Structures are given as structure tokens and as C-alpha cells.
Image (cartoon, rainbow, N blue to C red; front, side):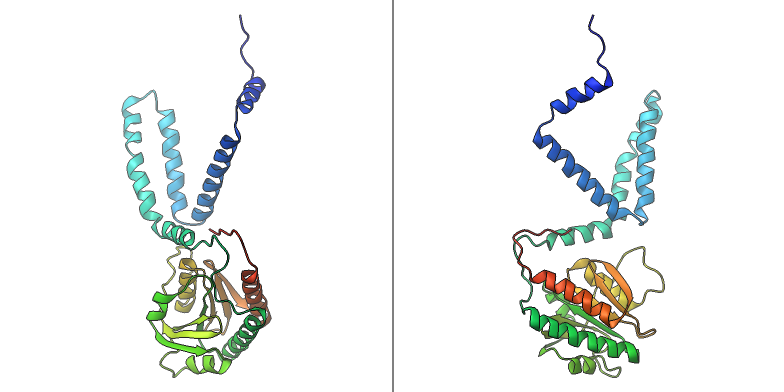
Length: 273
């Protein structure tokens, strides 16, 4: 009589039958699960995920109890629908990031290193002045994705960027000072623009409207937003749905240079979620 196969032999037998495509398949599934967990971490949907796990465990434990098992299994479909409804902002954000993924090369405004450095230096100088005088400001810098719909909400300018022009736009009595400025390369495309506000549930109630708008545009596009608080004079930077608050002028300059210098390096393949 053949002896039962022990665990080690079973493991060796299983792995010996694995094909490269199977390994790739498992790695892809693991990566998707990892990204989903990162997406829901710290959100209200995490509690719902825990509830679904509890239901799955109860379905397995109640298999000898047909009536209760049937009831639990039929609870799964409404739970999945509830996940989609609750996840709506996160799912939309993920799909928008996937839709703007850059597959081939760069499509942003090509200025060259020296011109980008000049624009960023002047921008940092202007923002530092706004911080000193506690002048509220919101500047959005385009990258690969054109903000045509956002620009249409404001006044078209198509003017060469300068520190003086920016100071004029955000002068407290200017009719355009409450909106956002859209910067494309070394040109101000539009001013007084209305940005979509962030729907992230983790935002503090003390987060101002300018900061919510900066986060919103960075969540939905690959643009970079610079914010100056009118109340505190603090400088913040929003990139990819993340807000870096209380930056000094030197820190802002370094981060912007790092962002746009990395954009200038040619890429054959690039995909960011």
C-alpha cells in the first residue's frame, strides 16, 4: 500500500508543475491586491472590507448549517455593491490615474533645463513674497496632461510668466485673486480658474478651500499645485494627491526642480498608478 504523501513532497510536487506563466499570473494578482490595500488603507472603506472578510469566514464555518449558510451567501452580493458605492471616489481616482498613464516618452511642455529653472526660481520668489505678506495664492503647473476644462472656468491670458504678473493677479483687490492660475511651461494660460475639490475622507476639517482645491486637481490630473495660505502664510505643494505643508522657499524650489528635471529625461516606457 502506498504511503500518504507528506507535506514536503506535496509542496515539491506542486512547485515542480508550476509554469513561468503561472508565476507571472500569481505575481500580477499579488500586485493588484497590494495596490487595492494601499488604496483603501486609512479610509472608511477599510471597515467594510473587514466586514466582508468576517462574512466569508462565517460562510465557511456555517457550511453544516444550510439555512444560515444560504442567508450569508446571499448577503455577499449586496456587500459587493456597497463596496463599489463607498469606493466610488477612490475607484474614480484610480481610473483617472490609469487613464493619464504615460506609455511612450514625454508629452509635457518642453522648455529645456535652463528655462524650467528660470520659471521655477521666479515662481519660488513670488510664492515667498506671498508667504511673507500672507497673500493667498494657488498656482497649478501642467505636466503631461493639459488642463483645458479647468482653464475654461477662468479668464484666458496666454501671457509670458513673470513674478510681477503673478503678483498682479493675486493682489487682494484683483478680480482674479480668488481663483487658480494655470501655468503651462513659461506661459500663464488662464487665471481665476475653479478647481475640483478633493473628496478624500481623511482630510482634516481645518483644511482650507485652496488646499482642498490643490489636492483635488492633483488627484484627478498629474499637475503640480503650489498653495499659499492666506491665514498662516504657509507654503504647500500638492503632487499625486499628497499635500506637503509648511515648506520653505528652498524646499519648494528643490522639489519643483526635482519633479521637472526628472520629467525631462526621455523614457521609452513609464506607467505610474
